[in-house]
Amino acid sequence: MATAEKKKVRKVSYCQAPLSPKVKKGGATVVSQALIKKGATNLVASVHVRRGDMVKLMTGSETQGKGKTGKVLTVFASKGKIVVEGFNVITRASKAKTAMGKGGLIKKEAPIFASRVMLFCTSCKNTTRISHKVQDSGKKTRVCKKCGESLDT
Ligand SMILES: [Zn+2]
Image (tube, rainbow, N blue to C red; front, side, top):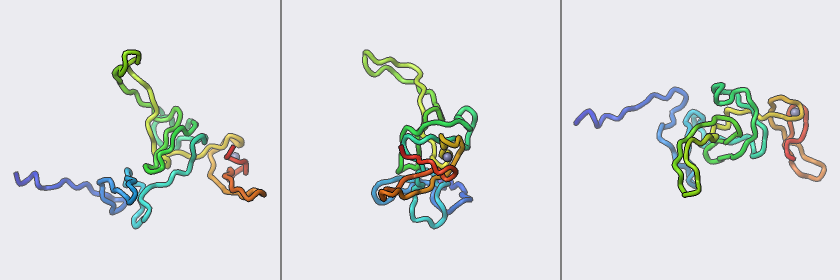
């Protein structure tokens, strides 16, 4: 068939990046083309939070947990994604793998893009950004930009 040879091409308005996942040197794959700026050399979106941080979901639906705060459980730095407690909870059907294990519907958090969350400061109870401060001992710490409270505990 001649029509089958025609490749379906979707238009990208935000950048000229190809839609197929790009593999960088070192094996890191880029998943969201939307996060790549035109002419960017670093093709992976950086994650601004760390495991254990409290974050607030800024975008998405109510069911995904928009407006709620949660703790970062896992960071996938190469994908630019994070898993947050209580955010984007999906229900998966699973079969019992062992004789002892139970199958059925399992609720678990699915990864979300880190750009969808903002850091939440527990001392000033507000969303904030990270500022860096060099302590007297020479150690660099992350502090809340609004109240100056240390985020590394
Ligand atoms: Zn603060």
